[in-house]
Image (cartoon, rainbow, N blue to C red):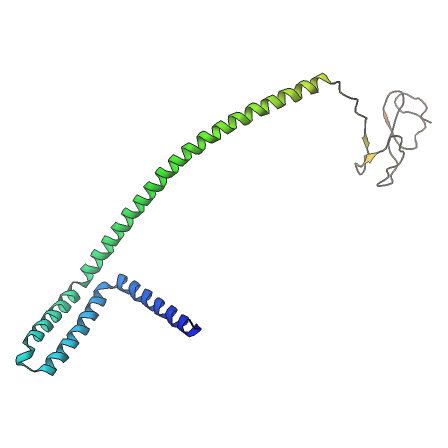
Amino acid sequence: MTKIGLKVGKLLLKGGWRAFLFFLRHPATVMIAILFLVALVLGYRAWQVGFPAAIPTLICLAFCLTFIIAIFLARRKIQRWLHASASRGRTAAQKQITRGIVEEGIDRGEVVLERGAEAAKGALSTLAEEVKTDWESFAAKPCPAQPQTSRCPFCHDLLRSGAKFCDRCGRPLWLACPRCGHLLRSGAKFCDHCGVSVT
């Protein structure tokens, strides 16, 4: 198919869809328009044939005009009735769909919950065995002595043992008294707590 044919097909589909939607929104107006066109055709046919032969055509024309007047007078009631029946149908369909979805979801949910519970039981028993084994092996080993790491009091960076200055900020570090462990200022020669010589 050519591009023009595709465009024409799309336009016809769009036009048909819009006409269908218009008919759903305004059915009385569409029926009046159709009956009016039929009445025009019947009137033209009666005019062409002449009076004695046009009596059946005139009877049909009278019925069309009667229907047009009746629909015109009752168009609001028709519109309300159609909207009410459509909304009732929509509500019933929505309830039925919702009920079906809920029932199916409950059935699936029960199956999924049963499978999940079985899988969770197996996983928990395996995890409990692994934790028990790890705890027993951990409790059996003696804890290795952790080396004491100190931090710079200014920038809180980790310090090497025996460092006198911080290798990050360059400030002199506090020293600890070798006898009592009291903190001393950098450059102190004696402990101001116990009096021992630091140098």
